[in-house]
Amino acid sequence: MVGQHVGDLDDIKRDRRLMDMGFKVLRFWSNDVLRNIDGVMREIEREIGNVKSFR
Image (cartoon, rainbow, N blue to C red; front, side, top):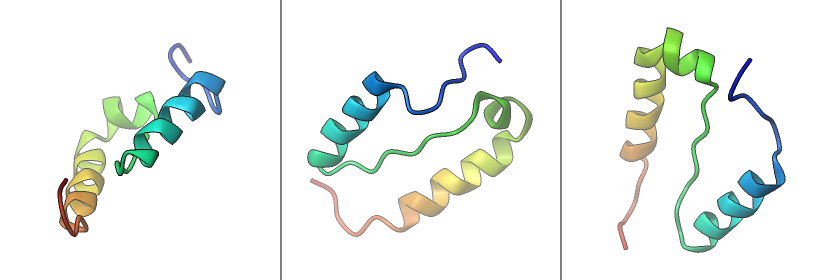
């Protein structure tokens, strides 16, 4: 599938930098975003609800 890659080194480095800055990285398969956007949005909302504080 176009746009799908797992464990790409650039993604790993980018995720690490974001996590080091205090961000949580959520990743979703393109297929899930295209075919199950409601489920993706529920997961994002759930994670937002778990946020204890903002910087």
